Image 1 (cartoon, one colour):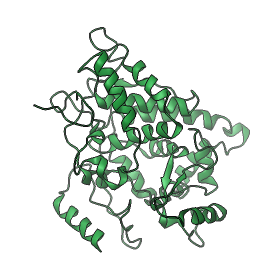
Image 2 (cartoon, rainbow, N blue to C red; image 1 turned 45 degrees about the vertical axis):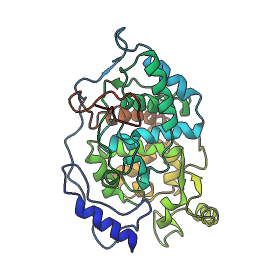
Image 3 (tube, rainbow, N blue to C red; image 1 turned 60 degrees about the horizontal axis):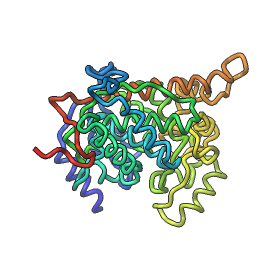
Length: 356
């Protein structure tokens, strides 16, 4: 009841903002009542390249020609789990306040203190890269761009070089970070296809791009508290978790809701198309993933990426196409809510806004 009271207070304090969401339950709060339609947000116009962003932004001699190299070297020495965390960090940054490094800010009631972000990893790596950059070219490289570079470099490493794209840069760091905004903007793991699609659409990403980016669930780990709605599996449901996996997870999660399990038990440290095979075999943790088979359009795309097609219909083409589509979707996601120099700054340290 106390948690519900917190929700009520938060909801009363937050007004309706274009492309934002009313407070939702989840990530530790009770899930919504299935019999009550979930309020869906209005979609925003499709994203287009943000003014001021360009590939090679720091290449000029008066900027920081070694910026991407410095970030890459920090990412290269990270563990597989940390690299998975860097990709997730980029997503969580862009979906809340835009790609402006707001998720990095420390302090009471900032984004990183919110329940969905308590398990985020990679902050120390971003700080390390920033410290090296400040020594090499002080006041030039934004924390937001470091997050974007690190997400790309982590994707490259975990895909064994199959994912490699150029990152448009020139972002400024935001000055606003509110814990409550995470609940308004991050898609919940219990969401159905309509909700997840709408929440991506509100950021300018279409349904196909949502399916593509969901493939990042091929890596990383999740706390048992993120999928209690999936255990035990619902009877007579086409999206219920595969019984053997459900039994294993039930036993594992009996040790506590904070226990972490791989999101992909087959190739847990490899960013590949295994996620789509898992969706087809009902071997995924979240309802938002399982729901991709509830529409013929999304199911067809899942089958294509999984390579679950006859030879002449794209059996081997689908997995290759997914790598390229993931590259394009990551670049497009990087355009969300980019701040200008008038709206942001280049932070000296990523955890704190600059002192005036």
